[in-house]
Amino acid sequence: MQVRVGSLSITGNFRENNEDRLVVDASGRFYLVADGMGGQSAGEKASEMAVELIVEKLERQFDFSENSAETVVETIDLSVANANMEIMALAELEPRFHNMGTTVVFVIIAGGRWYVGGVGDSRVYRQQDTALTQLTTDHSLTQALVDAQTISEEEAATHRYRNVLYRYLGSKEGGNGTDPEVLEPVGGDRYLLCSDGVTDGIDDETLGKLLSDGDDPQVIAESIVAAAEAGGSKDNITCIVLLID
Image (cartoon, rainbow, N blue to C red; front, side):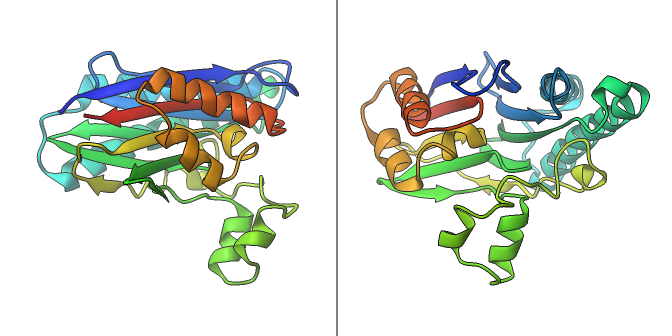
């Protein structure tokens, strides 16, 4: 199977700097999106550290031909936990990086399987036959309230705590595993990795329509980012689109 890729990251209309980072591996082994937080240069530093440290660990210690899902998940979790520890350590040492953090989501391909997971509220979606499914779980207070059936999905969309995270890289809970979905690739499937700058600007119904429109992943990525910006997103906007042939 062949994977075709499109990607884009912009600062958006309401921020002075871009705290998002994305990684598209030239060899098609992994894809990552990170969304930093902490103000000034702290968010940029956190997201930059996350993707650099995770990629470094994967390239140095990961066997992409590994068939054991348990081994793959363990190595992914160790890579993310290592990045979390380094981010926390720098935040303690450098006052200007105090309280910095970042989300991260990934698609990692090993042994013919796709591993999809993350920490925070950036997301990965899969589209099959136009049906859009969110594969990752938001580690936000509103999602916790939805899970507890305290509020509805509709209330969560405008809840005052919708962007407040209880797990992210840079927190004590950030290294507690990524709970990846283990998937078999299917021709025709489409995947989207995105920061919350995308989902703040457009709803899932619109997102599904944009993801299914056309056959050029770069054009699709650009249309998603443009729609989120036009939809009033107040954050940096980043996405990676993967089309499986």
